[in-house]
Length: 417
Image (tube, rainbow, N blue to C red; front, side):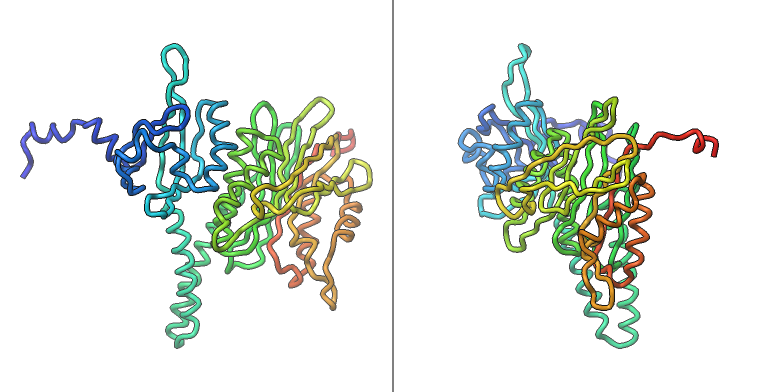
């Protein structure tokens, strides 16, 4: 039976207080020093706390884990003071019973009519579904492995499960690298990703993206391990590198932010870490200035417009996520017309060749790229792809290749062709 018009219309009226208190996300208002001034029922329920023991007694940092407090003090709070707002940063909240709640936090400084900062309003989104998804992938994989030991009928069923799982893994693997690279004005980019196994998610990653003001950022790296756990770290790493670069594109600062995030999230139980190179591209009249820093990653190769190639060592870089504080140093180079910068993961140099299975190695790669110079990014990546294919079964690890270069001047003969 349809309710009366009056009762129906009453249900359509929004109760502002109820919308705030029982919103699907947590709301928090704090003073400028972080003292909690107001919160909604949703957040209190997540944390297992009462309003009396929270409002006016606790500070925002009291709700964070030890790693979260460090990140808040060194990155989140300074960015908030500088920009007035920070959006979608991953944290873990600490509940009253000691349990941890993964969340995404966005904060904004609210000002009075005179422009004076008065308080900070924070929105907190529950991110537990992401963890649940990772657990589901692991569960499905275990089921597929157990099914192979059953009868022929069960084996066929297991094969169908495996095909479905591979479909999911393929989609997820594609989501970990950009479907295509943007073409920055005055520059060329090219990339290639070799997947060693369709049964496991790889941990290699790369990206090129605009930073604004004509500058561009790029990175390439390799997460320790394989499978859903590595994919989760890869996704977090790509997101963190992009987000950090938007706030401060200094390569050293970006890698330090990533180091803090990985160390905070994966210090317990099953530690995860990665190697990475991060750099920026700043165009100018004579070419492009490249600044890059490395965290334990193989050095990039610079192929000059002449006929040589050289490694660009980035000393001092430690594996990202291993220690709370890691030393990183950057290097600067100028790219001019015809120059190409080549980045790669260690699957390339660790490929096995010959009957004795010797490693391909750094010296062989440098000799190979010296023979290519000068080469555009497309030609360099195409040549490396052919090289990878020549390894056959000796290439047993995922490999990512990224090339960035400045087009060589077009000659009159080339234009006529």
